[in-house]
Length: 341
Ligand code: ATP
Ligand code: LTN
Image 1 (cartoon, rainbow, N blue to C red):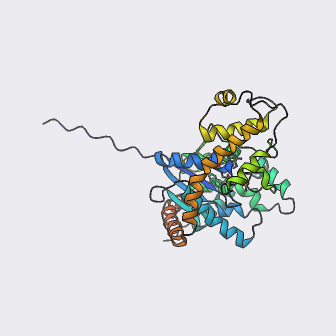
Image 2: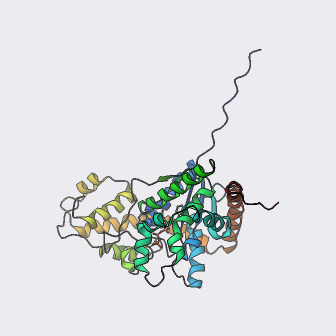
Image 3: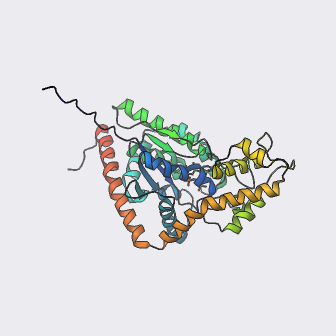
């Protein structure tokens, strides 16, 4: 009898990992640049998503506010539609391997390469009274987050590209000194929404830790607040809606509108030909409100269910720890550490 053909082994799904800091209420920039993609990718890949609370203390946090924001960001991960049965959803500090591997990787990272990080330069200028060693070593902790899970892909906004390159360099270096240990990750930067700019200064990225709340739309802003912030967004004085040089404010609003509606820039310019900025801004505000409405509705239901959130965090940490500890042990063994029995 002829042998049955052996079925091909099922291909391992690629793993993606990403994190968001609980350093404030997430903005429309975080949503369009990162969170919205996570939900799509979670269906296709093996996903792990974390609240990066350890990263957030590189800037001083008020304890009560910090605690609240950690829970809010965890609830937001569920509100965007991540399914904690399908993806690993967890809080970074609940998995001690992150801090442990970060220490190890610090010793495989050069002072010179960290000094070149633009986010470090920007943040140390913004917090000149607290340029701490954690702020400096921030990208190494981020590399640990990624490498612990052997992530193939890391979906982030464009501002994180440089940090991804360092994570790749660290992985390659370690793999060369010893033997292949870490998967070298690729960034996944969406074509749209990768860089949402400040509404008050369209040369700067929209940031949840910006001291001026008019510069960002928070994902929890009420519709009237969203409309007001978008209405007062800085634009040029030409009064024509099209994507072009010297029109950073309008370009940014077109990017936001395009992300929320799926319309191309050409279509938007066509639809608003002969119409003023007032009308365009009102349409952008409506589109943003509609985009965020279901997220906010789900969030309001989840945030009050404390025991559900605790259960999700506990289960997420247990699943994450199994993968993370395996990688940590593998790396430490190669270095020559004596592992506990
Ligand atoms: P902070 O303002 O406190 O430094 P942040 O919002 O810049 O925080 P994170 O919370 O760590 O940083 O960002 C989470 C994700 O959101 C990252 O993938 C980041 O690239 C993305 N992101 C942040 N700001 C923007 C933006 N303006 N446009 C697009 N993506 C963004
Ligand atoms: N530094 C990132 C947040 C972050 C992250 C990560 C992103 C921390 N650890 C691991 C991707 C993978 C930021 O966006 N500021």
